[in-house]
Length: 373
Image (cartoon, rainbow, N blue to C red; front, top):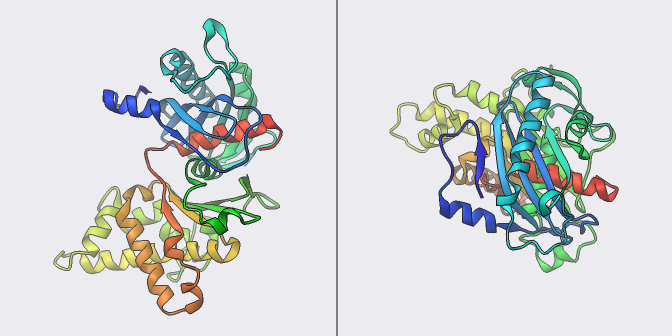
């Protein structure tokens, strides 16, 4: 796979390209009535990333190509940049074809497989049924009918999801069917959660492979549960939201001397000889405590089979997960009830190399074509 990028110094090595071209991932969600080739676009505050994906009827997903461009502020600029990423992916289709293709895709000009649709995801208040997004502050978008704009310029159907919900779908596609015991596989219902440790703190919930949006679309906004013990004021207006300790902006506020902050916090908290050891230990306790609280909320409110952890803070990797597990085990020692839930065994880290936002957005598009999102 060759990654098109206008803000990187160079491309991945040849061996990485071969490995990526051959990469496939499976999931246990319902099969797709409309398998085929899709484009997934993940719109963020600093970059717009895209992936060209192929889904077969059993839900196996191949990542064929990726592209990204820097994000610009403004509705018109966002639409232009999304179209630019789509163009990069479509232009690269001929070189992206892999041996797994068996003729099940429709052909367009030149015999190239035709893209069936475009999945989009973006932060902010998203209305999937209308394709409208509102209040994306870091992109200067007050209201934008995004799917209409993209469909008009590309001639392809499009579907829009909130970025955390798309990441939840992507994590489920890639990892959802793993680590299931025989009893769990035979369960009448599967509940899956994704905890996003990004700029803020939020979660996505899937029930039997379908997004649970609740009554007003705020399912998973656990970052605004006001139980954090330091009682810091949140941007939402409340005091003591979990996000005030575990959100990315909050962690930067608590530890401004390093960017990214978490690796430095963990390293100094574990080094008794470090001059900032005591302060780092206090900050680490606040951050990990809030994350563990969020996991407790998810476990007790929806009882998921697994909680996948992703987002910018999660790129800290294994040291972060071990700190979370240590806190969960400490809590379990004081409560036989909590111990019986085995929460430390029910969390897993999303592979940062997987474009789960793009995968989830494309998967939502594929399910929309089927008739349900």
